[in-house]
Length: 108
Image (cartoon, rainbow, N blue to C red; front, side, top):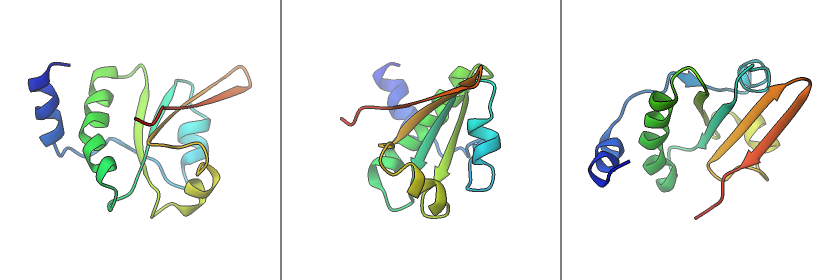
């Protein structure tokens, strides 16, 4: 991504297609046949606000190969509590053949 594209992405305010909740997390994330990227975010979190447009661009770039979505931790306390020790901003969930892998992105 070029410097110019990066700032364009940051200014973008498009809604995310996949919104994960306490109610749909098992089906939409853990039950997904393809890899999933979850953006755990909160409205009051400055770094989350900066990452939001980048995550939206990632969803657009990956198309149908990877499911990308957001989970508001304030509105979904159950998932926030369960994953509080593993989320920084993004987690990748991969299901298949009865195994689940959860990997955490590194904090910068």
